[in-house]
Image (cartoon, rainbow, N blue to C red; front, top):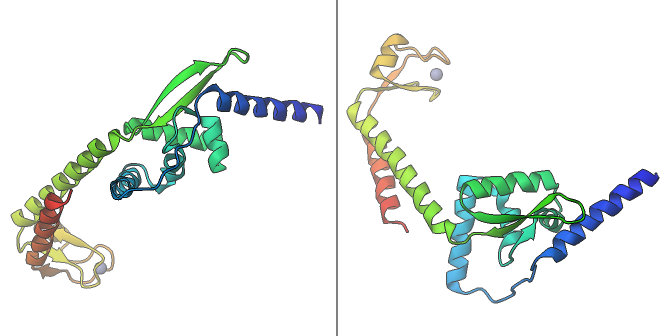
Length: 201
Ligand SMILES: [Zn+2]
């Protein structure tokens, strides 16, 4: 009982130190159109590179500076371990910066985190380039094998001529006879996707 109490008191103290150690001032202002657009871009970049599971941490950090992971955890009502995991992932994508400071009393280090808004456009561009690259490779493969795709009438498999030959023109999943597929529409769709992506910002 007494032991438990000590631990709780200690945890509270760490949180307090972390909270008061640095500036946690919130900036409250009305969002402009540009800000809304940047919020949307941030959210899509985070979701695509890490997953929307990281969004509570990002939302909490936005508009703040140098926040310890303990304060973040408390703020979003999550485990510190989870918050750390998200922060490391964000850091890998250059979306947060941090510094470590030794707690003089406890002798351990506490990390203070800041969202790196400047990293968003660069990551957005990298994601876009990566997707374009994948689409172009896919288009190349579809064009190279034009008219040589085979598909199961039950849509459980699709393969190129060579693989279809190996499967003796039977679906490996359900055994139905594979049908030759005109992939002209697929090619058209990929081209449209590429075009859309190239003209998006
Ligand atoms: Zn099938």
